[in-house]
Length: 225
Image 1: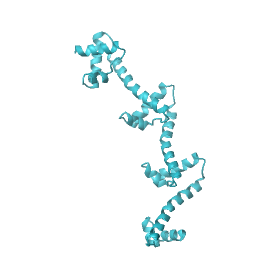
Image 2: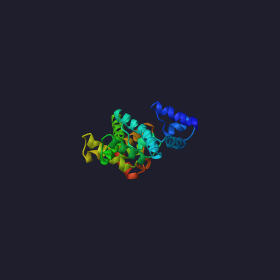
Image 3: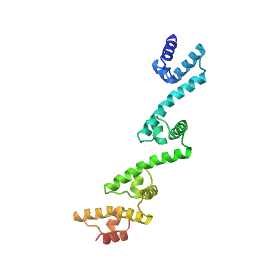
Image 4: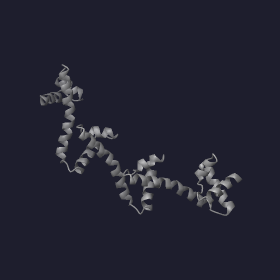
């Protein structure tokens, strides 16, 4: 193992001390092997305890996390608990714990503020999609927005109402009207298509097309005309 001790001494003298992971990689071994060798070396040299070596390893690994969190913050793309966990191959709870730890280190945010910031970052993706759809003349319904984000129609309706309030927009009643108009536009498009193809709908066939009854179809046809 003299080659290992020589490498550990070289790295320390160069001001680039090894972590368990980096020493293991240097010798084609695992992180655990590297940590064990560092602890053994420290005991031989009368240096750090195993606990100190483990702490140094963890600090070195976490510095990569802190660097990524700072990069994302400065780029205006702050991580959520889920996105930070995914970045490092970990879970959402791991990401949440690291973000909370980072905020405390940086002089920090409270846990409640952290949760609020994470939710706001996640919600911003929804607002971006709503603006895109609106500007493209294809406004979302509660159902289509929910489907877009893997959620249900009620979640989509709640996000739509929240978005309208944020944008300084409409009352709840106007929102309902807007959603209904967006849904009906799909009906009108289908009625026009069938008419132009020489296959006009009856009340029954239109209702069946949209999973409704004959009376609903008749009402829509009358409304269309």
